[in-house]
Amino acid sequence: MSAPTRLPGDPTARQELERALRVDHAGEYGAIRIYQGQLAVLGRGPSGATIRHMAEQEQRHLEAFAALLAERRVRPTLLSPIWHVAGFALGAATALMGEKSAMACTVAVEDVIDDHYRRQSERLSESEPALCQTIDAFRADEAGHRDTALAEGAEQAPAYDLLSLGIRTGTRLAIWLSERL
Image (cartoon, rainbow, N blue to C red; front, side, top):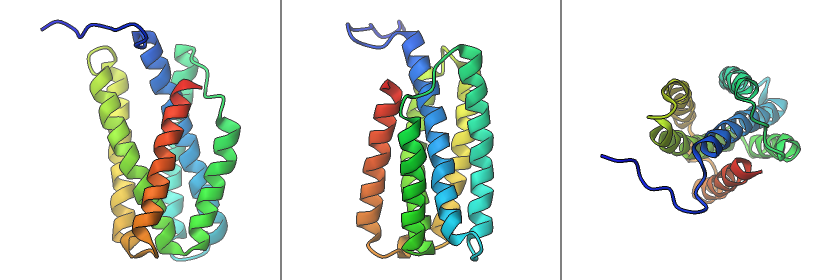
């Protein structure tokens, strides 16, 4: 079976790789900032240890993508200053709404990231098998975060459906922008 035809305007293989690394690095950075915002509010509460554990995993992911950016000579997103503020604000705001709302934030973000990593791994599987192994391993961690948050009662958060919809939409927009800028 032949490779799909590249249409005018479609990203080249190099551009596809750059987008993947750029957005994955940005996403891990944003996740750390979300957890830092949540820890600023809930760090001493019952969910503090859980949030701290997830943040530590995100830190390892960020370090891996930072190394890949340098190795592959890919610049990070230009939007990092925005994700610095927005991530912390989202984490703190959901934590101020309560532990279940903070967990709802994790579920919403990780659902989008799970789908994003799955599609990315499928697109890059033939050209970047080693990168796909990394993405797949991180995807498993992200799914674990989602499952932990569900077990912590995320779906019991006030206005769960509305909160989840807003966070999922924002996460998808952040992905789209970070791939391109």
